[in-house]
Length: 138
Image (cartoon, rainbow, N blue to C red; front, side):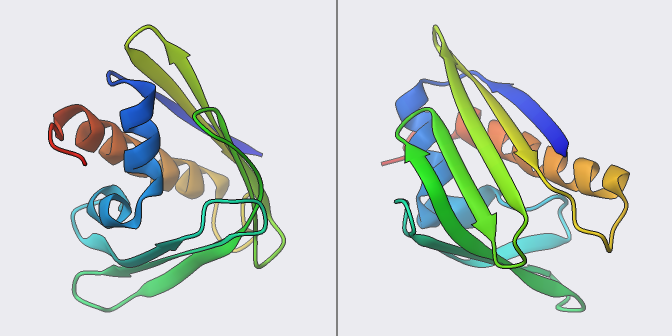
């Protein structure tokens, strides 16, 4: 399993909304400036499906990150199963006006664990920046 985390200096309700709404996901879900999420679908409920279409800005590479939710507890937990049967967990832990976000997931076999850890850490770091700087999120 791979684990990454960050502390977001924002209220839990804001963090949850920015993490889960497609209109926000497409704005922060990328590891580097040469990648983007072109489309996001998110039915946030048990057995609900999600799909994030990611590609390089020059369109030379891309993939869909998709699966179903196996557990959802508002403002605290999201568990999922990808279509290749790997699983993951995202925990949101509120602490005063900050939220510790931790994502734990099974790595794929094609890429090194270091690469996958770095990719995911970069994505949640972009999320942290987006959440802390986005004042008008509704």
